[in-house]
Length: 224
Image 1 (cartoon, rainbow, N blue to C red):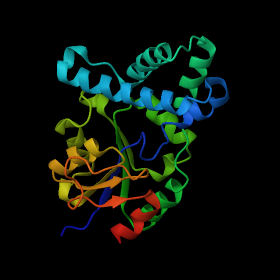
Image 2 (image 1 turned 180 degrees about the vertical axis):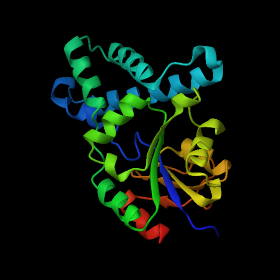
Image 3 (image 1 turned 180 degrees about the horizontal axis):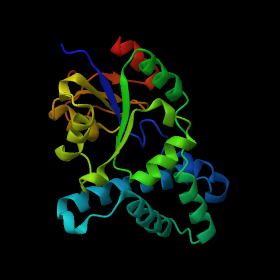
């Protein structure tokens, strides 16, 4: 087995809580805010996949898709307050990191393991997010799909990490809370790890092939 020399993380939903933006405005959204947030997340991912499948001429960066998805979902839920929508978008650019994330990244860095993000996010929104979350100094790189203009799980995206660190996929861990993302990395040869905070069912036949964690607090011990 090759030693894992770098760990590549998905950002949204893995290091950063994608539901934090609407949680901050739950009192204005009402008791259904969790479903609204889940619908928004699903629509973001749908738009990314559809744009990738249609082809390069229809590529839009993830921030634009995030805004388009919010417009659709708020209309579906009968939310017309423009100020509220603007506040939600502003909050999305400064999402909270999950509580265990800083300590976990510091433990890996202390061990000499490179840490990086590989995300569908566009560069400016990623930079703002990691600074706001206080984890920018713990990362060796923040890689965006915008350099290849296609979204995960396209293999071209995962190869960005291999090129950045001059490592073979088998020498890198890839950590994601999205099973389709872990599957994409696994199929390309990365040592994939799924973070399954909610106890969701197995998908893509990952279980038994890919380690599954309840939180990132377990990652350092797994890699040791």
